[in-house]
Image (cartoon, rainbow, N blue to C red; front, side):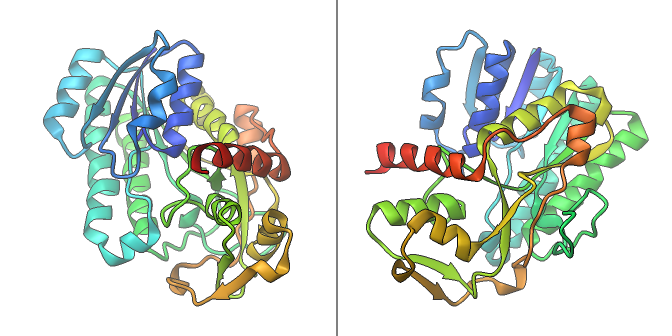
Length: 314
């Protein structure tokens, strides 16, 4: 198939690109490099299906129109977005334009060309989890940051194109994804930041009391899920979660990575109003409709990530 991948030079995007190329598709990647970097794609360029990488924005309607006309995409995997919660609180306008307006521009092209859209949303749209069965797709939403709000707005537009125009779409909500190629600085995920600090001989800093929990999904499992959602008509018009199905407190995660209590400290939270106290994924729907299950345990994933960071950052 001919596939457009937005945000393909980013952390998860790079893994989605790899999966699509391994499956034999022709892939065009669009990324404005605000989060991604071209070096993420270096080892993918030898694939026969790696058609093009362009540095550009989904807000460029002329570019989108030209690409859709020229390449006749079968699927658009839309991962391009502003993803930093604190940035969205400091500058909500940029996040709204990138995540909501940009999605609308892409939807218009998908509608004109009958291109399926896989829309990458986030578990951050959910309210806290209250039981051990985990968060299903029917769980209440609580957009506690402009990032989550922009994603909810975009989700509603995506679903409206399914109901109004019969456009094949699916919304995917992966839980906290981690692994190789994730940034280890302020915009990175907690696992990458903790591992980098450990390897650098620094203390691990935990925001707040550290009792907040996360459901951590290894990136290759996430990419497999996202790609499968594009292949299947079973999930058209649906919202689908993916996670490990196990949550861990940030305190326990820090101990798992550091193995030394004296090197862990608690600091004041930078955005307590947007913190979700408990995130635990129920992925029954992905299992039933896509036959998807996570394959990498948390312990295996942390080891793989630590091996990668030690090779690339030390």
